[in-house]
Amino acid sequence: MAQVWKEYPSASFAFHAIPRIDTNPKTKRKHTKKSEEEYLRSRYNIYSYGMVNYFPAEKFKHIRDRNNCLYVLLNQKNGNAQLCLDKLSQYLIANTDVVFDPEI
Image 1 (cartoon, rainbow, N blue to C red):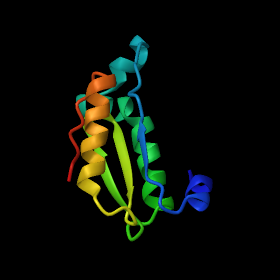
Image 2: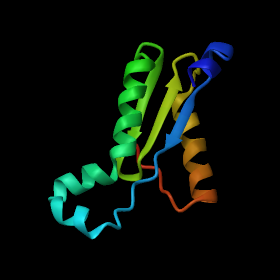
Image 3: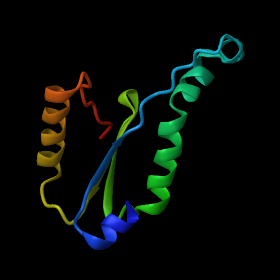
């Protein structure tokens, strides 16, 4: 992503970190409800940590949809953030079963 940003300075990014499926009965017993949610979203949590640390807030608007494990980096150079989010939402509804619900 950093290389793409370097080559295309106005690029925005999004990722969908599909939640883990915990099929191991031994592991399931070790989790409390809260820790199980964290375990299922661990990929999202790791990617989110990287986005915050590698893509500064002064250059990108960080938009999260934790329930669906979606993360959007909107480049501040792009003028209409809401239009971008609306287009992403329309794309997701048309092509997946994900309803984008960002935490703004």
